[in-house]
Image 1: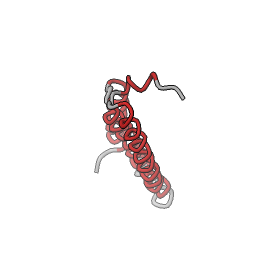
Image 2: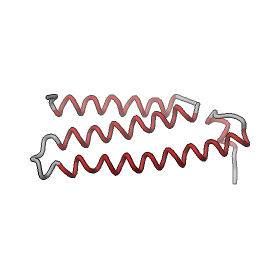
Image 3: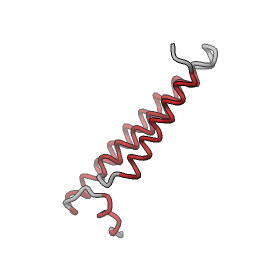
Image 4: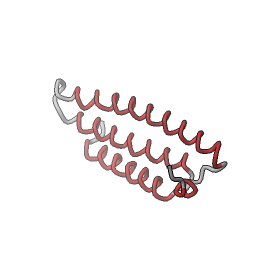
Length: 103
C-alpha cells in the first residue's frame, strides 16, 4: 500500500494542476474541468489522511468525500446550465467575453 505522504504529494500535484488550469484557460469548460480536478484532489487528501487513523475514526474521512462529490455534481449541473444560457446570447464560450456583462 502507498504511504500517506505519497498520497498527499499526489493530491497536491493534482490540486496545483487544477488551479493552473482554472487560471490559464479561457474556455469555460476547461475552467470547470480544472475546478473538478481541484475538488477531487481535496477528496484524495481526505481519504489519504483517513488511512492513517484507526478504523472507527477514519469513517469521517471516507464519508466526507461522498458529500463533496454530490455537491460538486450539483455545482457542475448548475454551472453548465448557466453556460448554456449565456452561450445562447453571446455565441461564445470564451470567459473573457463574459466580463462585460452587467445586470
